[in-house]
Image (cartoon, rainbow, N blue to C red; front, side, top):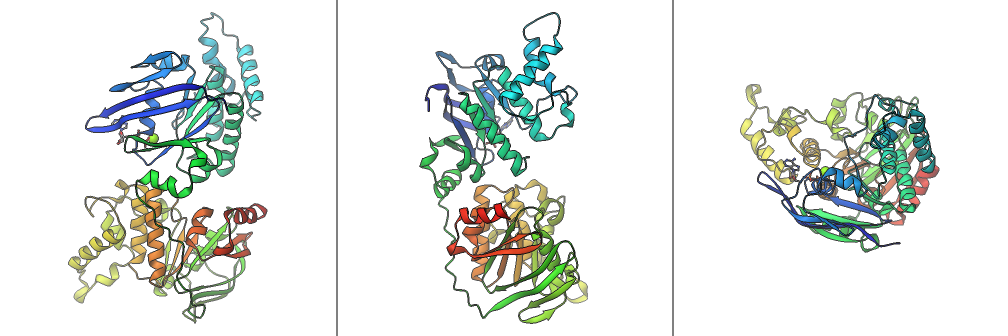
Length: 497
Ligand code: ADP
Ligand code: MG
């Protein structure tokens, strides 16, 4: 790899009001590298990007590009030096075509009197072909998917002679397939000698695509090394600043202690002949591609839809689950995948949300709610779930994703479940909260609760589960013991699935 430095940011400081967003940060970008910038929310990543691109003025420090030093680089100078940023909020013009978005500003910048639309289209086609993209130059950008809008921005950056393309969390709104496509383009750009900086926390993206990784924590660059230096463990440690526990299980599972069992359960067009059992203290993973039936299965077990045939046993006793109340009566809890629409009442307080499933326990004589008990319980739940908030009266929507998820899990733990199903337990939570949630899962298992985790996150499944089942087209096609399983094997099964 050519290691020429393109841009260096040196000792950059930036304060907003009372908040010191950057506390003297160094950051180097080299030609032909894919450089991932990671760090928890608020660690200063976007601020640095805006300083490099001239959108913000730093309080001190300098940006060095080639021979030139800037204390206060202007957006035009940044672009002139080949710095292009692709933001989360897109700066494409929705009512122009793809060709116009890609090439018009370039053409107009030449200060010609007559706009040559044919030339614009030609330029756009050239770039699109150079990158092997499938974009219709005549399509209006407002009709494109987010992924395609991003590609339009990348093409536009190229036409403006980009040397560095910086993407701030480019994959948050993309599907897996779109992410793969984006990274394919990214590798193409790298081949052409550009440097790419992208912000991401997702381990599979960081380890799959980056050549170099820099991690910010609280406004500081805590590490910047080639990717080979990192593994999942030290990655998390640098991100959070704390040692992550290894949760890998040594709990002895007694196969006699079956908590929950389904025999040949089916629901038309959703899942078919599903049989499995779950022991005390066992963590069972269920994975499968979108549409494999895993969520439909979970919904039916929790009484959200009807199991049409087959049998369900709780503690060896045959039970009928027709509705959510039946599931709760049998001590089954469910943490749904979409906490924002299904799991939580967003405008309501943390307290209300925590108590939503279990308020019945606190109703005493004369149907009076014992609020003192409620508020004590709320306090202890917040402490044990590590929910960080100044007050339990705060609306839940004010909390971070990780805190919201811990409230949601707390809500269900408070019904004292024997069985808990967690669908995508760490989707959209930061890596520190992820670790807290893994601790909660392992604590639940220690207490003898049977846990079912539905997830696409293969490292997560391998890390937390004793056993993993893979679903396809509504059926279980594989079952693994975690100890015999590598991520590679699991992902191959999923691939063939
Ligand atoms: P990241 O991109 O790593 O999530 P940011 O750079 O957006 O972090 O933010 C770093 C810190 O600076 C945060 O505490 C954030 O609230 C603060 N901050 C960022 N931009 C502004 C702004 N325009 N005004 C006030 N505070 C800001
Ligand atoms: Mg940001």
